[in-house]
Image 1 (tube, one colour):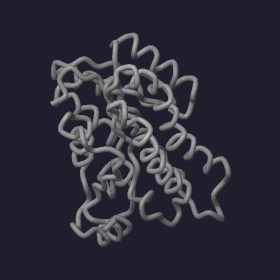
Image 2 (spheres, helix red, strand yellow; image 1 turned 30 degrees about the vertical axis):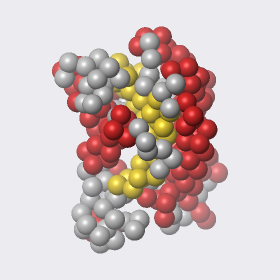
Image 3 (cartoon, helix red, strand yellow; image 1 turned 120 degrees about the vertical axis):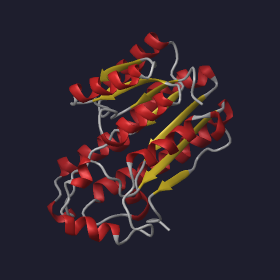
Image 4 (cartoon, helix red, strand yellow; image 1 turned 90 degrees about the vertical axis):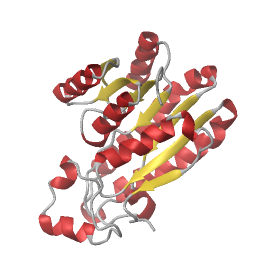
Length: 246
């Protein structure tokens, strides 16, 4: 489904990003495994991809750093010759009620989750235009669709990703470049598993399917959007959330 394609996945060393990288590779893509701090985990993902017979490289870069994103993409384009799929998955949370939230915590989440998405798209823009093809998949969140108490910074960043997605879809459509967003709901990851059992039960009670999702649920949707099968889909926000945003 993705044979001959090269995918750049940000935040690919763990959680949903790791599963996306492995799933894209399982469908035939070579994968650039971006990470910020988890070098050992990124190297482990690379080894798993190589065991599938695909090419993979780890590359350290904070997506919040505009210049570093530029260097990463320039280097990877030189190494691989082309990048066909950009998955903007890297993200952080610094949850708190607004009354307790610091300016630094607000800025950090916006800089990584929203500005980071801008940074990678900006630096990939000319290459995609030159190729006259490309797939951009941005990770939003059910919080960006519905809002969430204690997550004003995170929800704002993920709502911003939706606006950016729709704008880029209109801007790039004439060049055969699609831009879509995936909005995960409550997904079993290290982050969510650290919640108390009471908090987990309260969240799951709000989900019509009455269960948490798995990283694979998100990864399979990303792989579909990255493929030729999704060539007539652009500017969409696809919720993979068990029905939370109905």
